[in-house]
Length: 506
Image (cartoon, rainbow, N blue to C red; front, side):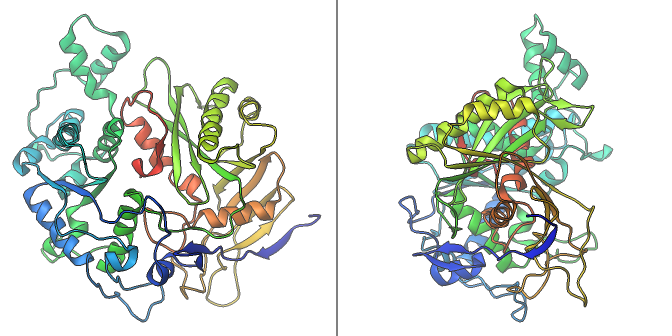
């Protein structure tokens, strides 16, 4: 490629049912159903945890998604009716879950309002975590996944920057401040009660992340959902009027049911034109405020295959974050260790190493990092490092009222270009956004590859988000969930976990 040029990439297609191809996940699932797979669940095996009201809301919602839900706007191409769970996935949704576990609403309300926020979130998490652990300990055929239905007060007060009004605060039992607790964790203490009291400061101040992280050792798959998401009409807003949901019931059904099917080991769809032997890895970094011993960040990797399913590898915690350039970088040894895990896992699944291995990151890879990655990858594997990040440094406009088409690409050089993964979508007859769409900067930073092919791969990877049932995302799946995975990896001292499927983290 000798000169800069503007091109239009084809919209990637997805495979459903028995090799039928469609652009839109909803079209493919409606017409052909999910992929056939030995792990396809015949019936959803679900456990539900919540207050008595929360359980009732879940039952009502579950009844509704077993049947038809009309589109919010039949004239809008981006809206679709919900045909019913079994009609979409060829999997039965039973009238009753395997188990329902009640949480005392008064105890929960009092606990989440404890003045010490670390104590409040930790104890609130335990009200859901402990009964799940007990059930898993005493039952040989546990649910495949758990719905954790939370009241709005948990969403409101169970986040890092939330504050409880002074009049509602409850006195807890914590006698160490965060500063004192961190000192005990760093320096140790002769008194076991001090060490025990300091434990709450090893966990991130986030109910959602902490619950998922604490149950990783049980390999429990969790879907946390708010009561107001399931039955918004049961609640009033600040003006005393029925709460208006951010999405209509049919859209909520498409999104929640797709992730539930995926988390129950189903395969909704996969990319149609993926090359054999290709593997994509997204690097995960997260600053870790709970780490001890001078470490300031946790690293990890997400490996994605053509099916869209992925495996998460937890790397080392260490001083990976540099304040000087505000970026994360591994040492050569740790980069080699992390990539060894990835290559070994791929070989275990396929019997041979990948033919092509693309590492996606938001920052350029250092020389030490790349030497470490290269040392762990077999010589027959083509290794390519790609930097991908959203940017506002280039805008592109069309004549008329419609924005740039999704899939437009500006190839600035043989190794760097701009890709619009957001934009007008002909299939939807709309642009699902509000502002002028911004591109992704895509740079082949290490190794050799064709830039247009790399961009086509990125386009495809925007279409395998099983946490929702949308036409496409703005970021490829390798990077879209990097922050979410990092949040779970650093929310609790999870120790040396084996590589776990992606569904445990989203």
